[in-house]
Image 1: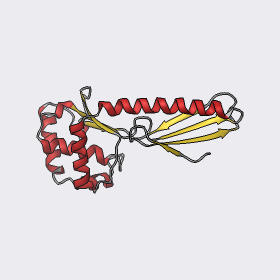
Image 2: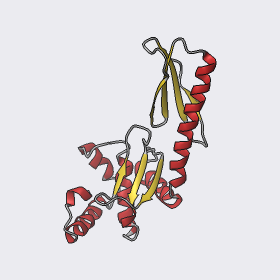
Image 3: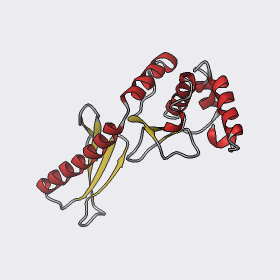
Image 4: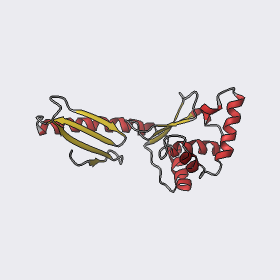
Length: 186
């Protein structure tokens, strides 16, 4: 495997690893996970052809990440940055954060792994809710970047946001009022 080389598409670093694989005969295979692209090529592929295909793959990844970044919401990004700095020492990272209108059950989601690694979506249903509730939902999704599931470590980390329990009570009340399953909302 060759050394990963960082490529910066508009400040969004992507690490590329290229390896020759004797098991492959004709086709170049690649996988994309977050900011890492791993490319496997047959040993007999000429270097010039490999370089051209690597450039094409990177261009596809850059376009997709730019598209997601363009959909990001600047105000929501600033809010996430503020929350991250204030309550999590700036330790949490994500790719993009945006409002979405297609969430019916959840208030937010955060992807782990794959091409959309680090993309956070917040339901536009909560835009009119008190700011400290929106902050809680953003904090909740940010903490998922460090703790993918609702483990004890997740809740301990999220408790650094001081209004966690109060926000959870508010959300439970709204869910109850709407006749929704409270657990799906938290």
